[in-house]
Image (cartoon, rainbow, N blue to C red; front, side, top):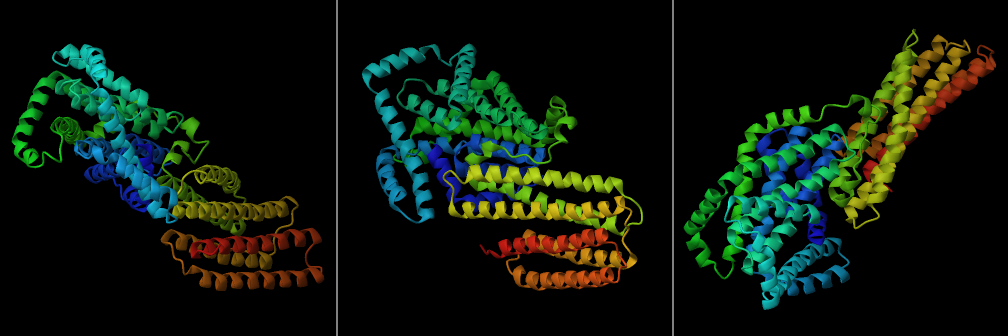
Length: 535
């Protein structure tokens, strides 16, 4: 299951990122995207962990997360339908062919496609091997006796089976694996259809343990997303247990109506497996239809269950969930959001700096905010480097590897920009503390250079947001203008110094401030080079 999931993520990485970014507050759209993503990666656990991670990083809202989680419960039923296909006998050939391409192909897309097929082959070959072992008279007799305590012919039996399915799924942390074993047991006639159906109900509760583990140590909203998943699956299972026999009778009735279809494809389908898959799909479809209109009340319920902890969360403005490293093609979205946070923060800082140096009054609050943000960006940059450094050490597609390196470089440039903005403010404060105010001429020069640099940074940030790879030529031209302007102002200042119109200390600090703007331009130009794809 791990190979299949990782291979599919690598092959469909760009499509998955587009799906995630397309998630809106429109509940049906979010639900459909959750279904598609889970159908591709073949694991609702992977999807819910991703969702918790995205909510934790602020990339996704609680309402969007609930919608995707509802869809994930439908998407996970695809596994049972795949197993229902009578293709287990092809597991070993698929495995053999896939491993050849996985080991020897140099093309990355072929390798990861082979990795996904390798996982598929392993699943089918494993199920066939397990099924063969279950049919051995001694093993079958032992397992029949072992599972005789789980007979879902009574309500107590249904509860017992559901509880066992829940515990088994909690242990293996994969509902797909549990349903695979359940299907093999049913195919070997070790358990009956009702028992298999009751086990399926239990595994829907057990699968929530993964999201709960993922929410430990995360933000309030991430915890709420995990609890919404638990509430949805638990309530969905509990209401169905009292009407369990009516539900399974209904599934068998529907199956009778579909019998003609299955009869025509009897070589391609296993009937008991198809019935179990129908139980699983029907259960999740009904619950999703019920809960879709109740997403608002569900969100309000988890908000009351887990109140906001403002004191703990103000101190940290960025969240990286290391559990997202299992899905590198989507984890990169989390880090990209933090790079954008750095870009937006730099724009805010240079805007505040402009207000401070042009004002006749002392703006203590803005000065504190600017220095505070400079410290924040230092921490964000470190977190981005650690997160992406951990990510690129594993099995990562080439395009994700390149994007990770690109983001690490941009994070470094934005952090340097914040340092030079803070340096200008330090120089400004030093002049003020030494009672050396800027002359009108010097102030005009400084504000003019500041405006040019601020607009330059904003243009490059905009180019990064729209991925304008043709920005470099214009950035170089505009950058040269800033350099010339800085040199002109420095020359004019040196003339004033030679005429003894300014003190030496003031001259030293002022020229440092001018030079800091040129350094800002250099780092912004480096970002333009990254956008243009230059190494």
